[in-house]
Image 1 (cartoon, protein in one colour):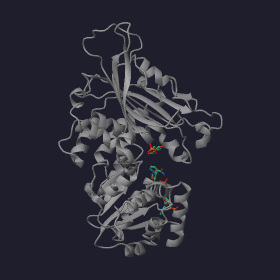
Image 2 (cartoon, helix red, strand yellow):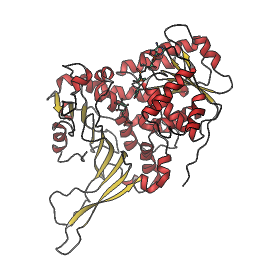
Image 3 (spheres, helix red, strand yellow):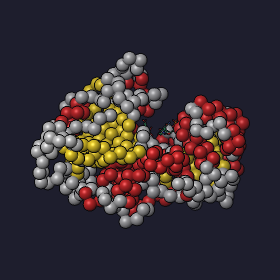
Image 4 (cartoon, protein in one colour):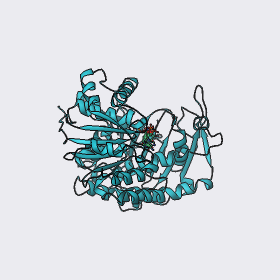
Length: 482
Ligand code: NDP
Ligand code: BG6
């Protein structure tokens, strides 16, 4: 199987925050891979903006150093790296002042696609869009890309939306949730809507419950000040877990088209029911051998921010009424793993002898690492001794099934940045979707202080606070292991 690469049109991409962590670790490496794949045309131009006084040459050599440090895949391809770096320019602009804007305008071409990537704190979105308009950088078809966090709550998300929509049409605004750019997340749609096998049983009549786990073994790293304001609920649930939930639960869209999909996702978010206080478990990691505690990492010895959250949620709609969705995410857990597991009900009429510890049928979609699908099936335990049942996995790892083609799959940012240039908004969040997500999150976060158990501590390397198990045990269910 050969991956098809369709080159995009020539473009000028301006990255505000070009000296920042995201640009160095994710955006520029992603563009380098697209350059190597020849999807990025030779006359594409990337202009990286920062406040530091750097020449093009010194900026390029910084990027080369960080590519080697990480290291970025194929960095040893010196010829491609040299060509790629030559197409990058640096512009020094403090966006709060007027210096540098006219020089930046001179760098932009008239006859190519123009995109502005705001890889900066959201507090700078307003000033950048205002200055870019004032200095006539904005063209009628330019795209504007904004990173998460898109607000801290409903009110701030509305303000950001108002700031952007005052200057741009919704069709020009690309709100990033990088989970949507992951191949395996897009695979959720391919599986559901490309196989007639699943759709007839994808409802509360057949599905007992659904689990979504996004576990990370790492801590908060150097992002303590941001994370301590956000916590797991705002950092992960409001966006990544919510998007996974939408793709799993939504109705089939009429077409595979941006607004058709986003309309269906919005309906899912709007049908999320209120979450009861005893359906929420918040946790925070302690220290362990060679591992600092959350409070030490974030620098606040009395921080009450959650690094783990588990929720039992329900959708008040025709398809899912009566099927609980259990969501959990956390840092410093036993392993790094993202998976969605759909547990099916037993057949309506059970003809075999009852057996203790029977797990039943389930479909698990592993999104990372080791992407693939496992169907757990009930079969007869082989051998004499009567009709005993057992469960076996029908396992498919995408890497094995797709062979070397799996390695050629673009990572999330590669896909998303190319989609911006192509003008395809399917994998980006619409303004109303983001606001609806905050409208659901806000009352939960506002009730933190009243949670029955407060904040539970957990050991690093565990699977979170034991109370998260109680959330499922209460319903005679278990989390699938991390
Ligand atoms: P950094 O703190 O590493 O970088 C911030 C960038 O903003 C720097 O390039 C800085 O330039 C620039 N900047 C700050 N103030 C100004 C100004 N007045 N004028 C011009 N440039 C300015 O942040 P990150 O790269 O980590 O994050 C960027 C955005 O992406 C944030 O919103 C973050 O939440 C989001 N994000 C980041 C992720 C990550 O993995 N890093 C993941 C998901 C989202 P200078 O160096 O010159 O000061
Ligand atoms: C980011 C969160 O959006 O996603 C981080 O801010 C988290 O806290 C990261 O670690 C996880 O992304 P991935 O692609 O590594 O699963």
